[in-house]
Length: 345
Ligand code: NAP
Ligand code: G4F
Image (tube, rainbow, N blue to C red; front, side, top):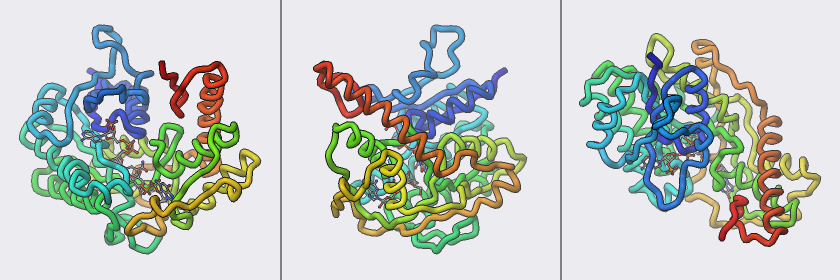
């Protein structure tokens, strides 16, 4: 029988890459999705088949990390071999505007899922999407031994979830792992995270669809990898004989300014002609430098990133240029359309 995985956050960037990866390994994939008034399954539509189709291997279930009873029912219904908890309010800036909600979903949501596993009695392996944001103000490089100093409600919620995962591992012998992932990006990255915001804006500016790019702190440094590489690490953690916690990172760090420079250079433009700084995008407390040391994952899991920083920038610029061209074509043909290139009747 095919191994079965349950993914929360399957509609997100990582969820979509992970679903693809697990399908390529022969898994049956179940995903928790939230009901929304507009479609929120764009990133996984290419994987989904109607469940009446005998070849369907992706199954979606409505639910929410805020509702515990439903999570227990879902576990009973699916009986997964592996659970990947990727669902979260994942935006750091937004977590300052919605600290209670972020704590509820990103922190307590993890506990609800762990409790659902414990109560259901189902034997499964558990992956938690922990974050380099937990290191916060801790000086670089950061590894599994670096003490956490979170600088945001999001970071604090992830620290809570991290310790609950460890607690369930020790108290109930649950096979549970924390993947402490540094920033990872892709053409599927949400458009309000800085890398995607930049590649979307630069390509639209190049085609005359936008005039300015508004950003906040240009000097923050991040260790940016490719999301497709990072989901493989999630899988490898759950295949290992012992549950453990691992840092996943490239070991290189670049500033937001350097990222902007590369993107605009690639499009033969000077970013200084288009950039405006808007204090709205500054955070009450910032994480200045993230630079991960993933020696442990490289040694134990034999994981390493395949896509370089330059390749990542190229990939994102190319994908967003295609989107911008589609948008321009629709506009030139007289259609109203969203900045995603979707036409509006
Ligand atoms: P993302 O694109 O923002 O996706 C978040 C996912 O969580 C979406 O599928 C979203 O559903 C779902 N979600 C939000 N609230 C929910 C709720 N109340 N109940 C159930 N599902 C809910 O995030 P990502 O970049 O793929 O990241 C995946 C996970 O890794 C997150 O936990 C994030 O915090 C963590 N992480 C990310 C990075 C990174 O650099 N990307 C680094 C470290 C850790 P909708 O589509 O309906 O909104
Ligand atoms: O792209 P960001 O919003 O990502 P951030 O805050 O590092 O969080 C991401 O990575 C974490 C892992 O470390 C994840 F856990 C989390 O879920 C998320 O995926 O911002 C990156 C940097 C920050 O220093 C921010 O202040 O870019 C700076 N920045 C400057 N101007 C901006 C902007 N960030 C955003 N989102 N928008 C701006 O206009």
